[in-house]
Image: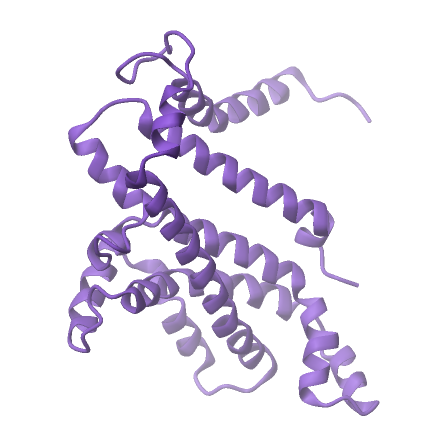
Length: 264
């Protein structure tokens, strides 16, 4: 294989630098000994990590964000899987309109969606409840999981499922032993995307959370109003580490090919 032209390599290097620079800057600032955010960072210290890892102002919202991300991801998968199977395998009246409606949250600014949801849920006493917050995150994450599953499931022919039923497997057994393994790549990819979206969501959490259910992005936003120290960079670095560790564990368990290629 011929080596890439110089301008190709320069372009790839520029893209990598463009994407990695913000993360590297945040990590660098997190280890500074300065009292305020400066770049390039001055000195080396772990004081800001000690501050955020022992401060409930950061750790409680971090835990809330993690739990909310897991709950919204699981709920989105439970809702998106049967919806994707129904839309792909059945003759649904006005299928395009139904699909457009289910994906409509993608076309709305999250702040408008969150405001509308706040007024709607308030009628049922769920405006700023944990259930209301979960509903808001699920409305945002379901379309991404559904869109991913639709692409994967549409590329799988019905022959394998029909063969399983012909051999006596019931609907649920066919789903667990045939359908689920085939859509696993889309399930994993959609689940990861849903978790990351929920973990970083600001607008919905800002309007629907309370002091007991405040998420990390909202806590960081409130902190930055009155403070401009590297503690924000430190907790952001903790977030980055959590996400990277989860991705490495996922890759270790399933491999990259299982995330991007259909199961055979």
